[in-house]
Length: 159
Image (cartoon, rainbow, N blue to C red; front, side, top):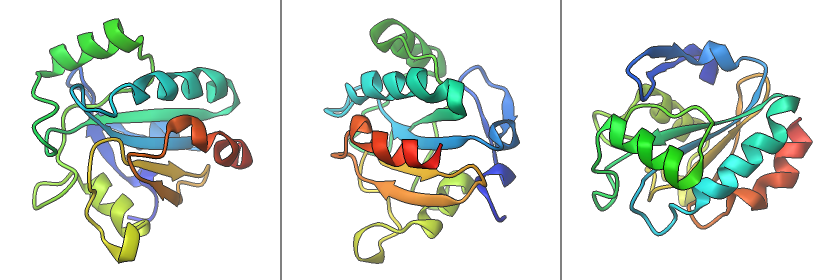
């Protein structure tokens, strides 16, 4: 596997989707949760998506229940929460593991391409963000505390 476009994942509505569908776009790939202190970042993620989508940008959300059990809902509950609470229109995928033996292969790849602090490959919490350029190369990793809005200049530079 050489780029994020070599992977696929299941959407919240249960359909397998190849990330080739996003080829040529700048991507922000985020592990999300509905009951986390960082959950309000959905609002800024959606704002980035609406602002930059016309220029070839997408946010891809991957719900994860590995951090404090903060994403306990079903796919339907997650979809309803995102739509009603934050009016999320960017692509959301089914619940995944981002660490451990059952980690989604995409996240294993993202972590190997952009390790965390001191070379750690583990994702530490919800709302870790991976920025991917138009060629599918993972160019940056940002922790939970980095707000989506703080990535605006970095995203503009890739567009």
